Image 1 (cartoon, one colour):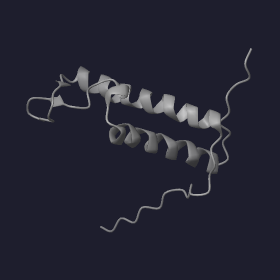
Image 2 (tube, rainbow, N blue to C red; image 1 turned 135 degrees about the vertical axis):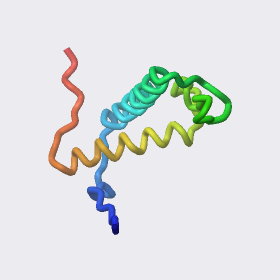
Image 3 (tube, rainbow, N blue to C red; image 1 turned 45 degrees about the horizontal axis):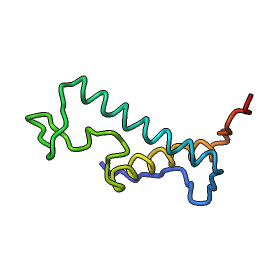
Length: 97
């Protein structure tokens, strides 16, 4: 089997300040969703990942993760937002009341 990934080209997509702020909130949320799932499966925080002992060093609040780990979630969410924009969706902050 040959797999040739062809993601939506988002290289020219420019985000607004509010979209960038949304990405930050969603990156933290996606980490929390991931962590909640792991906790429900019996995983706990551990200095080293150990699949048998179910410990993982990333089972910590988003703000305590390394920049590299935070950026993984940010990049994934950013690509989703940019892809949605490229597909014609509008991602705007609702008007303040």
